[in-house]
Length: 67
Image (cartoon, rainbow, N blue to C red):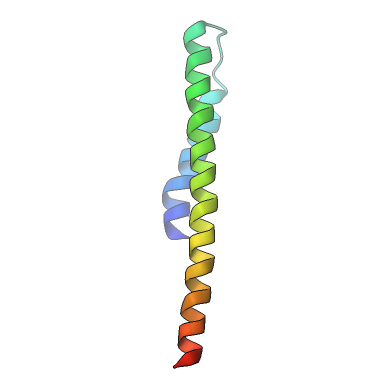
């Protein structure tokens, strides 16, 4: 969770801020598409990390109960 707050959340915030800059040029459209892709992959990474942490904590809890 620390990594999420330290890396993913600032990245997503920066992407959102950069998307607010629009001048209608073709370069801007391409830039916005890249930002959308970055946002998509960072959201998927966030969901994946959350699932891994849930599985890890469940696995660890089950291991401790067995001991």
